[in-house]
Image (cartoon, rainbow, N blue to C red; front, side, top):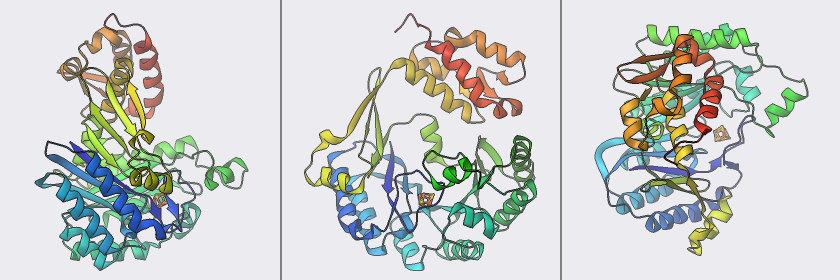
Length: 385
Ligand code: SF4
């Protein structure tokens, strides 16, 4: 079982962000931590946790005493496997030595930090609160605190970004000697200030060729520096792939605590998912009243679960295992969409070896189109449904 805890506080809202995160709500933090611990008490777990992840938002904005209260409360509630991966996200400009001491003292052994870009003008376009110097300081501080497993988040395909600027960002990140890098292409989300500026023509995105060049450069440069790509956007030195995310892509069950967090409990055939209200006060109110009916419940149909396995599996470079798929869903992948899979293989977009399907390099570029076609095929009736 994996554990995810959402910390929905940020110092300032980034201009591209549509996550459940809020600026200027620090006054609610103490109540929020108690709310998370009450929710944890309502979701007991009789197996060992395999990974834990504190995400956000900006967990490094929690005052150290509250962070300790939260983490120690969680450890009293759940069985943490000794030495398991325990990640916290953190943002430069908010990280302090006291916070790091509280985090590492309570079991955090991996930090995922938002660097995003190297150039000050791009950091401004994104509305980030930090400079690159602050990224460097934060990484040094984390190392001094004993964090040996550090990940940096970077973004490409940004307005005003050229392939040369992206390479400069990659090299600046590599100079900080991280063990893991997440490199995400920008997806402008509806309603964000960045999307509004793009729609109004005040900003423009790099063209498709430049964006593809940035992704190609990512693969080349990181491979030359010993990083192994294990997912479309994720790269790690050997032994440092993020176990929490791998669990998610392999559809391991998880408990999610906090505003907007979701939990997934496997049932005999369909899966039951619950998700919490995204608003901080609505979440606190739910936990203070123990009104768990406010959690939104969704049953994932067998058909949707099958497509999800394929979609998440194809994100990973190891791909989708036919026998594991059949064991999980009781139906052969080849029977559901074998013709389409082999069609993509003939076009050089999918690779099929030893019972595993995976995207080729060319397939990664058109992943969405591949998934749409597979979805259409899998939507057709299955005799088992
Ligand atoms: S720091 Fe992260 S969660 Fe917070 S506003 Fe920026 S992108 Fe969103």
